[in-house]
Length: 425
Image (tube, rainbow, N blue to C red):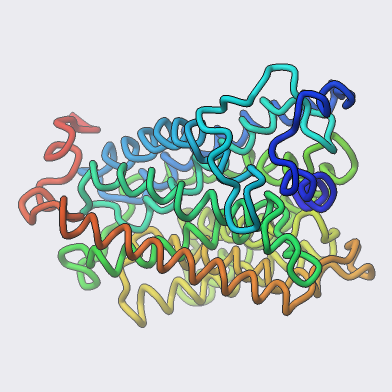
């Protein structure tokens, strides 16, 4: 989304949300509007049902519905939190650190307002951003499956959006301090805003929660690999809206973003397949799907500045580095980040942020963009804030409600012990 926030976003930071006067002067572009509406549906499709099925297929059968329930409930809750205060904090104009509360409950929103600097209605822009606020906390679910209480997850989600996600969104996309620092952090569609915040927070959640009983000696085998592939396929398709929609216009930039997204995902998929074929002699469907997500996460921050050559290299890097991260965290360090949220999303998003200044070179088909030291400072700031804020929220929940289910509930499975249902009869 850099194109918008390097032009109109600074005006939003100075003047707050678009005024009616500005809306009356702007001209609506029906093509741009239609594309962002379509992209909004695609990004929601990534969460419901894409991410839910991808995660659900990876757990044991007795916890399948509990994963679907968490993603489903988070989608509803995050939408309401975004309307009540998240959008105001992210895109208001209070100062460089947060947007303020001037637009609580969207009280300043009108149906005919057009975003300053764009040619789409503010309602469309708001809804598109809402789907990002939905999928980001839903990504964290993969870290704590099979052992976490339901209510604390919802409370954590609401607080996390307001304290972590919305402020970081403001810093980078809402005209905040990182959009101005050192020429501006380049994060086209969420390497830091989405993947780093979710990945780092997931890692903190794992440390606060503890490993599943039996880990690592009794590794849970994915109970429905076919469902994992179906969910990953939905994510792959939906990512065209995630990255292509972040251009905020129906133009060549959106087309290039979709192209490089697909290239990176394809390369990373084959890299994962090749590594498994070499190391285990048998490439797996789950591995291929995981490689796809690694490639998608890694290209996300760079999709607006790289070309096809850069996409080939970023997919290669994403596949190799994320595979190594999964092995390091799960096998060597024995950290029970159950569905590899940090290793795939956190590492992939941060990797994309840090290497995009190199891969956006013109000889690789890119348009240039990003200064490494600026990208590094932005990464350190986001990582630190995500870790500290998540720790404080989780500590408060742990000493009050508790985070973890009982051993009996974990053994029985969360489907029946928490929700009174079973996926299979």
